[in-house]
Length: 230
Image (tube, rainbow, N blue to C red):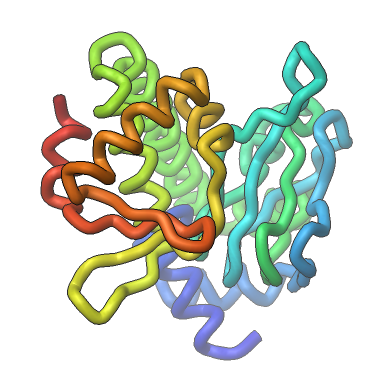
């Protein structure tokens, strides 16, 4: 794979800080995967035989709720790891992953990764560090549901989406370059669509956000940052 891929991996969320020479060896053992918009990477309940890192594009994780509806769990953008827990357990896939737009990923099988990591144990430390960050993020999200008001939880989600799918505008503001419904935003924080709608309408009146053609434009990220920390 080209040097640009090696540089990308070195700066990814999963392998950030990895040595260039180690990155080269890891990239050489990966397989490139390309998806078109709407194509599934894997389905909830599938056998888990490896993991991925997003090289370009965007994907979503969903599960089927008890009432048969689709629940949005998370979105993934460049540098994010997908399915990495498959390295450490034998459980099936816990969610369905679908491309939101044309996307490319690098895939490593569990067996191939273990062979390389056994020769380079520092990879295990990187994996454990990444998993620890995921656990902290999960704990922060749970704490937000307990202690932050709905507006704060929604602000966190909007800022996270802006970071992953952000597109700079000419006026130093940014928009989320992925169409989102109020129901999807509500699902990400476990709230009702009606309550999320009320918050968004209030933000629009105050000039914090706008929405055009299905895209949310964050007009005052500083105010949203303040809301996100309570």
